[in-house]
Image (cartoon, rainbow over all chains, first blue to last red; front, side, top):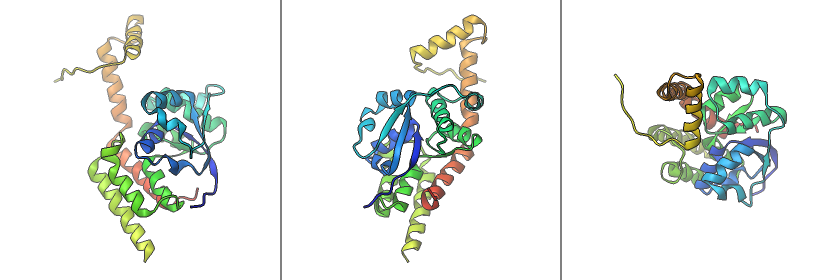
Length: 174
Length: 65
């Protein structure tokens, strides 16, 4: 399927690890590049090194140019990890408006800094909108999350999400 | 009421916490653990997490990126 290159994004460790565990890292392959802060790179290298060498995804390892006072303020408020701090700082320094993260605190901090933040679930569902995966493939990936990935989500909520998007995609087909 | 738990903590984190205690920035290691746990629970409330997941679903389905 054809892919148009989307914007630059910054990634936290969660989505890189979880998507790779699901053999679905290619769903972020349409971003022009995925910037990976140093601390996040080290974290992924430790837990899921193969996620850093996917042929379909352009990952760029980057260091923070300088500490950000804005980020330091929200980091203290939300007790963010080093990787999350670096990711937010890179977003601000490079005017990148999308952060990929599965961490609730990091997402709240991003919102506070006017940065959009989305995670593994959103990226998988987006793959249908971008025509990288079929609805059936994504439904199977979502159902596989508890068994095949280390992403923690309440099973009944995951069931609700699957039912919700299944209903939406069925309606779209009609 | 309190519970006694056994948990493994990476050496580096333990050393950093002990340093804070020795320097007088925290009363005890126990106090740091309690504070860290409380802060985590505050920033990861279930309702917040669910709302963010719903936000993810809507972006996945209808986002304009």
